[in-house]
Image (tube, rainbow, N blue to C red; front, side, top):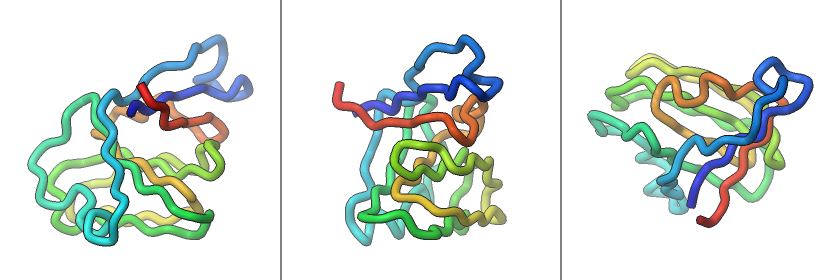
Length: 124
């Protein structure tokens, strides 16, 4: 599975930008244990990696950085449309937004992603 970014035409990143692949390796946090663990205790995150949290419906979802040792980019998505992008600091970061999909990527990987853009998980 891979994570594909389609910039919205009306955003600065979408001004003539083509779709791009943000991650070629995507793990799904599809159990309570894997969702609770997230990226906790990892000392690094590969450049082409994303951890995806899928939910049945869009609700306010909170991410915390307790026991996460590296900074990450977090992206909240509803119906494939980006709602919020935030770089979270190790141990101290906390953020909340509505989402039916949350993506965690290495810090800087979502630098060109903006609210209104589209992010999709696609089979390779």
